[in-house]
Image (cartoon, rainbow, N blue to C red; front, side, top):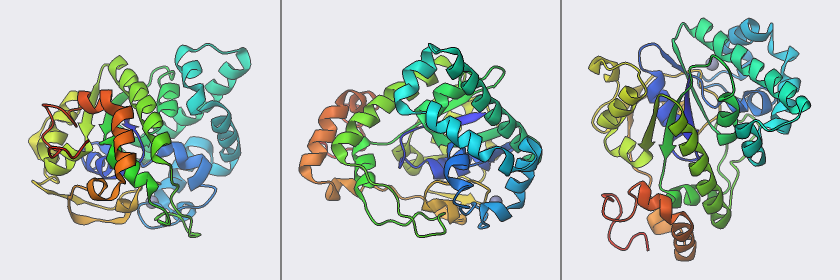
Length: 316
Ligand SMILES: [Zn+2]
């Protein structure tokens, strides 16, 4: 199982679909949203069908649970109770009472069945899950026998913060006009830092992990993806990346769920860096996000000598 970890609005839908096009891989979207949002709202699958009418997910639900109805409410309740950002220390350290442990085992059994059914129905060896959530990742790490590989996706937090300020953007997969959530930059900066520490720590603790910067993925998709795929112990055959060009990628529709608008674009997709934050994120917010996230900005090469992306003065 290949888990894309990171912060929302970092380009994970694109990355997940690029990985899903590798031989032996299947991309599934954000599986941590399947019970809580996708099924309950009957959101559109990446294939264009409502979830309830998608043949792939209907087969997966039958295979895993004998139908989604039998399990959805229970998995929603368990997730709401157990898999919270504030629970991460408890999930990671395993310090919990018997009730918590029993409920967590029940929740993880649901995801194990789900992953197995996806592999069986798709015929793929590798299931790509773009959930991103650190809490979900820390929980999954407790699943015995799961070959968990982690791709840690990073984007400049000022771009992430800018993306979360945009209001009134319709959720592409929603069928009732729902809009994307917003988040203020000062809270985003703190949350981003916390999530980076957690995702980085889990990635460092598994045998196969890689880190990819969104900006590198868009500017140099082929070598960036090739390095990540090799570090993750997946195919090293150059032909596996035939769908990835110099500045574009060819993507077929998939059965990925949730995610961004790019979920519903297929064919040849031109890759363009979204750096609108440089002109649109207010100076005060930019300075504040820069200050709060500075240790990671330096570590990831977004500012300082290793930066080849930030124009002089742009990050100040
Ligand atoms: Zn579908």
